[in-house]
Image 1 (cartoon, rainbow, N blue to C red):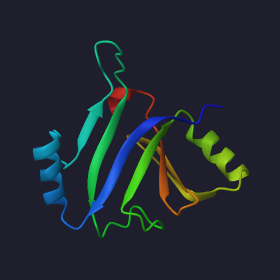
Image 2 (cartoon, rainbow, N blue to C red):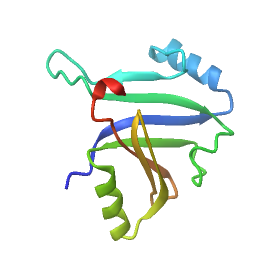
Image 3 (cartoon, rainbow, N blue to C red):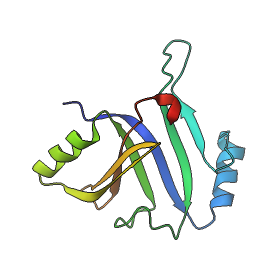
Length: 131
């Protein structure tokens, strides 16, 4: 079974999200959307991939979304079959969150790595144009 197929997103907490977003925009050229983050599409003339993209976003320092991790970041990894991956991780004794989410954006699940970082696993929706 294939597990991770790519990076779906990188999320960073900040005491001053607007300042941090501006720094990335002004110094690294990030094209920020109205929602405050960027989407990096995997498309290129040599490798068209209409469904592939990586999201980058800044969260308020007070966000509880990364809990129980205390790390100021979280990485979201793409998977083909969330249920299979979560079941395999449980069988291997990993600390898998019982909660999952299923929405128009896809399916989400979480596991803690050995250093206490929350890892988000994401199965994109069946139709990439929906993401």
